Image (cartoon, rainbow over all chains, first blue to last red; front, side, top):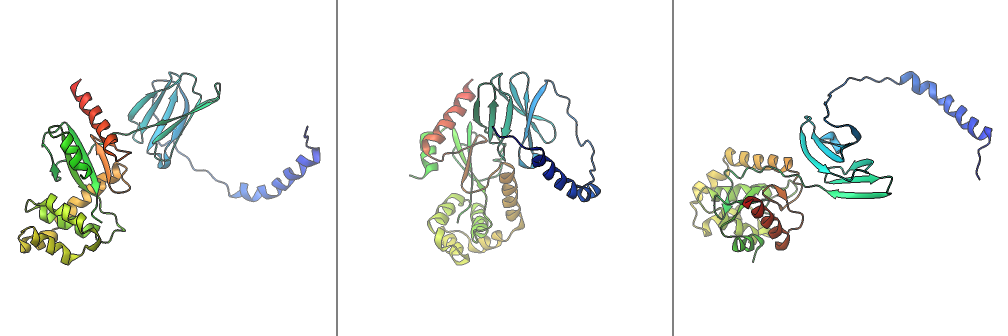
Length: 140
Length: 138
């Protein structure tokens, strides 16, 4: 069994104190509530994409609700009721579901459906086709 | 057979292939080539010009753009003037803005009714198309 002696704890603590006054003297936090969203369900955990475009909220009703930066619901994903924590990849294309009770980690691939304006772009096939295959390309 | 021809061959009545410009900034000829294709579109020859650009992908320059236009029987004076029109550049900028919003980072990037295609094989694309067609029938 490893046990720290008193001096083992106190010495690093004193060293930390020696540096702290400088940090404390300069530390200042400016804050304001930038947004507040009224939620329909009780939140359990939160995760955000890089840049904060999307916020994923795990709720007590076994769902992950995805909010846009403007606070609108972009989508809802049903999850196992015993999921305890969530995390997301940088762009939000993967959602990680952590279940501490069952010791599992699930990865969910997320596809965001985007609106593409086919309007005046060149096309092949029937104009009123049910399916639009849009290709973003260059020629080099 | 190129991928889009395979798709159109398989779904002649239900799929439309739309071309959106996304000239990558590190491809020196990507923007002028896009402008040239749009100038050709103004004379109703976008797809013919598009195919020629891909065939000549490694030797693109202003001379080549005119040569392709001439071979396709385009009005060269009109073609050259159209290539310089700000409205063409604006259209490309609109496509690029739309691409960025849709999370496009490379070319080609394909969407089937707004769903990003992760695997560009005909089988994966057909699967997405079939799902969309099934959705439409419900």
